[in-house]
Each structure stands twice: as structure tokens, then as C-alpha cells.
Image 1 (spheres, rainbow, N blue to C red):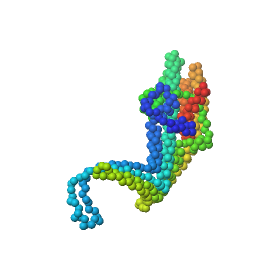
Image 2: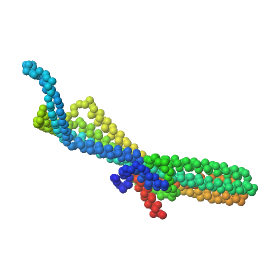
Image 3: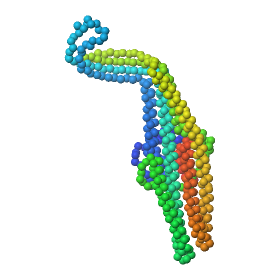
Image 4: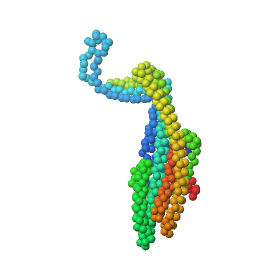
Length: 449
């Protein structure tokens, strides 16, 4: 595992085992751990980075000597072949062609070493290094996005579980209302309308409960997908309407994001890699200098006769159909495109954080408003129930008060988890580590207890 800047998830190595053991009650930290170990998209990006690392070694190999060896055996005829330039007077002395064949053995060793290329080799090495860093940053950015998606899916499932509990509570309330209405109707204290109204309310509440349960099932599927696993196991998650506030200092978060966002770092390194590629093609106008050496054994019979050779080479590019010109221009435009991509990421970071802070502040205001609304709905139901019991209130007023309370319960849940989801998005867009932040919140919650 590589670790940088105190971030726990800086290219964490996934575990090798493939089996996923889901507990009956899954915590957020466990869900993130499963994502790191099993998500195929993260594994793909890691393997891509590892493949790019090998390109560095490929580029460095150009600094090393290249040695090759070979051996051969032929069984061949030895007829003399007349070549241009042989005087015609020698023709009569040539032996006639024959099918007689002879053994011929050969072995050789060849050594080549590039001495100087006017920058071609070093630019290839630098390009490979920057490309590797860029792919590492892409892998980390992928991981941060996956962990943020897991947190959002986890909070969505927790929210839907609480909405199921709220829907069950509403069903229980309407069941109690129906029992009261039936009892009072039997003794003549309530009209038939009150009984029918209570039954309609109960049916609507039961339909809402069915929808809420379906939302739980689909949210669990979404969480499995976010973790990168396939599972039919039914599990629960931690549900809590308590939340840890997040300090949203706009300027501080912007500076932190521009310093730590992996996608921005990836764009910067990709720009540097493209710049080195441009310089490589500039250097291809220059010659390259090298050395060669060879050692051979050859003969019709053993022991073989040896020969050796040594020399120097210089390769000077003269004309290639303007290929190098177009390659250089392409590299220049690619560098410009990489600079534009970097600037686009910077602009996107600033806009995303600004929007995330607006969403977070709005979510906080919704929490305060819905909590007040819940208190008011409880008091309204208490008054409506009291008036209905003494015969001065109507069933319609009581039904409306109960519906308002049910809606207020759901709105509180949605407001709290809306805040948590907005917080998760801001953490990711700020370049913070979702795993580290989740651990910090867990520690604060435990200390608070």
C-alpha cells in the first residue's frame, strides 16, 4: 500500500480473496472496505496504472546494451553462383553443378549500444513517468468517486429504512383510529362516515408502506452495485438521525481541492507527459549515434572458425515524406488540448464546490425547518385528538392532523439524510478522503457518547 498526505485510501491494494461476506448489519466503514477490495472498476484502474509503470522500464531499456545470440545449421549444396563482374574467361574453369550437399554450422553473438540520441531517450523516460503518475491519480480519483457513491447509496438505504418505520407508525396510528371509530359507531357516538374515512386512511397508509418497502429493496440493490458486488443477501444498515456538522469554509475548501484533487493532478501530469512527447518529436530531427559488435563461429565441420567485428553507426534523418513534421504538430496540439483539459478541471472544481456548499447550507436549513414542523404536527394532532374525543372536533380535522404528522416524520428523515448526502458530495469534490472522513465522524460520535 502506498500512502501520501495522510490519506488512507491512496491506492489501497485490494485483497486477493473473491468471496464477499456481508454481515446482517452493515456499517459504512465495512461497505467502503468491501468497495476497495472488490470493485472491478477500481481494480481496472489499478491494473492500468501498473501497466503504465512497466512502460518506464521499457523506456529505460534504451539506455542498456542489447545483446542477441543465434545459431543455425544448414545442409546445402556448394555450387558456385556466377555474379555480375566475374570475367567470362573464368566460366570454363567452373565445376559443373552437383547435387552433393554439405553440413554448414553457424553461431553468432551481436551487441548494439545506443550512445547519444539528442534527447530522444530521456524524453521517452520522462513521458512514461508522467503518464504513470497520471494513471495513479486517475486510479485514486476513481476510488474517491466509488467511496463517495457508496456513502450516498448507504445513506439512501438508511433513509428508506427509516421511512419504512415512519410508514409503519402511520399504519399503526390509522389502525388505532379505525378501532376507535368502529367502537364509537357501535355505541352511536360516531357516524358511518368516520368509519369509512378511517378505512380509506388505513388503506392509503398501507399503500405508502408497500412503496417504502420497495424503495428499501431497490436502494439495497443500488448499494450492492456501488460496492461492486452481486449479492442476494438481505442486510440492514445503521440508521441514525444524528449527524456530525461539516465546516464548509469556501476559500479553504477551494485551496484544498486545487491542491489535493487527484483528477486535477492527473490532468497536470498528463500535460507534462504530452509536453515530453512533443519534445521527443522535436529531437527526432537530430541524428543518433551507436556502437555495434559481433562474434561469429562458422564452418562446414568442427572446430568452427571464429570472426569478430566492431564498429560505430550514425543515423541521420533526411526525408520521410514530412512524417516527422506532422508528428511534431500533432504532439503540439495534443499538449494544447491537455492544457485546456487541466483548466477545465480547475473551473469545474470551483463551480462544484460552490454548488455543494449551497446544497449543504440548504440542507441544514431544511433540517431546522422540518424539526419545527414535526413539533407543530405533534401538537396539532394532540389538540385534534382531544377535541374529537370530547365531541367538538371533526374526523376530517383529526385525519388531516395525522397526515400532517406522517408527512413531517418523513420530511425530517429526508432532510437529515439529504444533509448527509450533500456532505458526502462536498467531501469528494473538495478532494478529501471519504474513508478518512467517515472514520473521523465515527470517532467523534463515539467520543460524544
